Length: 368
Length: 197
Image 1 (cartoon, one colour):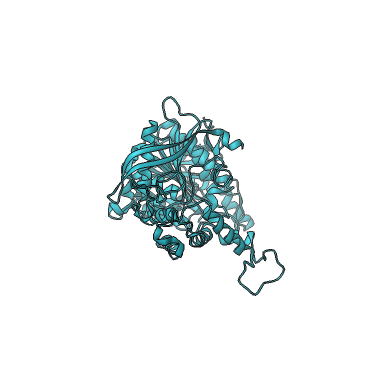
Image 2 (image 1 turned 120 degrees about the vertical axis):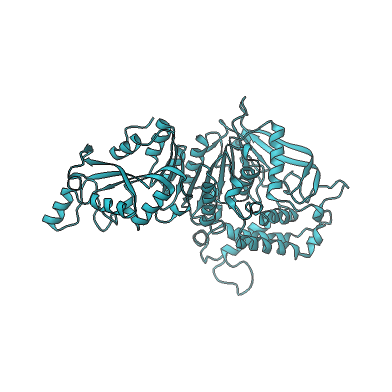
């Protein structure tokens, strides 16, 4: 694959320990990451890309588990908006993940998988692990930190807690605090996993059984929230799947049902159910204003970074209103901020899909 | 790097103090902001309603927020800039009076430029043809124009007076050239005011 040739390094960093927001300390923490391009002599061209809930470090290289192109292959590469012939691009699997970074499926110091003994983590803990990675790579200040959805929350968390570490902060389809509707959807997903008898209190590793049915339902529900009514209607309408008439049963009669079942099932082949619990928990805990008596603007007081915030008109999961709230807070904090609501039909997933206007904004923001 | 500015923008740019903080409301593709930043070292920020224009601005390295002058100025803190600029936009807002209040709250000074509806060509068109005028500066028919609140130089002066704003300076354009202030309400196609609180 042409995309694989641009990887510069695929590596795992081991941190002796990592102190967490919850008060616990994790030992022997692994951070799996990929880099693309060359770090400039002045180390000023580093771009950290943060992935979304179920993403991974394979941002622009073939995913070894699925054989599919990297999740932001259209955005990252030579001559692309995040140009790897100019920038040194870093992407790490988040803490709590299941693609090589330490998470609930990793072995605890006693040699057994953590399972539910894994401490509850926060978005800032994920960022803390990535800041440690930047330290290890000798990068004091990023040219840009960028991310969509949960990746955007990580970018904001870095801007708030480590304001000197990034000159530019690009936040796409994200929020400064998870709202009730999003917390609610994620609770549905977690309950589906935990209601599956094969979940076994999270201690399913090595039992030959895993809560695949529960995880698949969680994914199906979440997947709907990533799309839009328009995109579902255009893609599927009321069309039937491989049949000419309704079955008067509970098969996947409709194409959209078949599609969702496939999405759910294939997700279980690449994702760990406990990771899903921990990562969505971290997201529901995310509220940048919490430590500032509810004043979001104070999270960015004195920030030296430039910000660019992007939303999509069809995204009902992280709608434009939450981006605007963030932008007003950044303005009130005196930060240089740009904001644009782009028109795209694909719902929340628009940030991953073919939206040329997003390419222009990203290239323009990084080009400064 | 950028070419010559539109005449009204050139006048505004020529009277913004170097190094000052500026908010251009309705900044379009960011031409004025880029000039203020590059030539005068201003901290230049903008608001613009059109997404394509915002993308253009971001590509120029400007900080521009997509927003609507009628709704989104409220979120800017008091006194956050030295100059608020509203060029060729006041006549497109729903409540020009409230927008003017916001401009003078956000900035200590405000530049406002607008097409003068009392220009003799506009008057002639109404008087002789009995039709809403379509002119060089007002090129779109009444039913499609974004200009929903036409005003005259005299109207603007009285609105400013009502608001207790001081007219620090005013410039008038006929064709693309600056003209004197004599009978400006009849002769000027275009007016630019510098107001202060």
